[in-house]
Length: 446
Image (cartoon, rainbow, N blue to C red; front, side):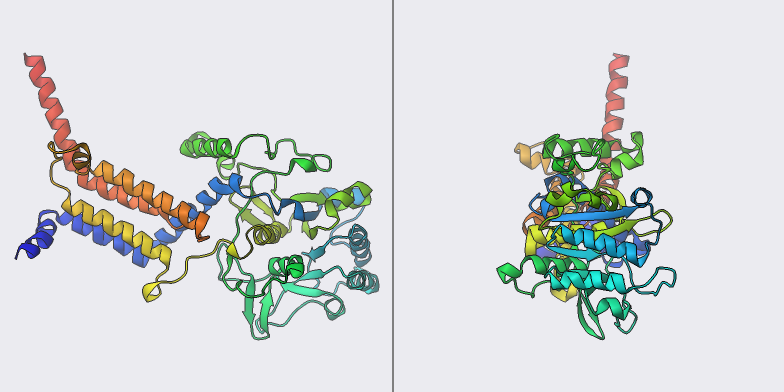
């Protein structure tokens, strides 16, 4: 009887708390109108942006993007798309700098009858194999898993799929197809890097959450214009974090791009195609993983970074490779499934909501005025809101930093618990306000 009274009495005395708890659990389980998905994406993006200044620089000097853009084309006296002969010349220039590997993020899936003969490009591709430099071509696969790269090119180079769906913001390392398991560009390039270490091909089944670095490499100032870029050593990591937090806290007073795109320059070392004629770039390219991509006006091959905003698509492959070189198999990934097929992150969120609900049921109608300080504080909704919000944010940091699990929806938790406690605490605030008004009125009468 005593146990029944303890369990049932709070539900009867605080029906609003019980209904609020059920509503929060409903949102957590059933994701009405995609509210939880939207909050989850925003929480993840925000945390990736805040942690970007702390991203290790170990892989930065190992990865280089060579970009073909409109300015480079004008300098080369060429137009887009490049003719096969011009592409062959570009590849031979790259090979002369002895890169460790090369990924070409250009598609050779359709025959161009205005592009000239293909023999020169075939020979250039074959030269990489002859000199022992791994060369990987971007590939599209049809619904049956068949490669669409032209056979004269796929016969002299490896290919890697760059089209996938259903992974959201994740970067898959392995794709399943009717033709077997396909390795994506970042994984193939990483396995080239770790051949000398006899790295195991196992352990890459789970898609990677791409971590984006923040600081541009100051050593590239002699090759590209870094004015307006935040370079490493310009300020401390913690100073940059505080600057971004301040900008985010007063978002409405700032231009949206300054908040969501705090760093206008890519993290990955970048050269431009017209610079390959300059022998001094040898120190940047020799022995490095090189990714050749394009950024042409009117051709929407873009990827969204939580740090730099929209970037040419080749950068997502470069950053995924950097993640693997830096973190190896400890790359960030989605939380593993737990009981009943519910992920660890989801169980953690549900646990926080249950704690918030149970606490709300047992908090007294009026704050306690007796007992120790902690005992009195524990009777206030604000105390529990601050405590649970802090624990949620710290848990997200802990999962990401030490367990390599993607951040969970801490922002959604803070909003739901905050609104829940604000609703329940409204009567207390109203009572406090009325008492204050009565005291003021009495003092005036006296």
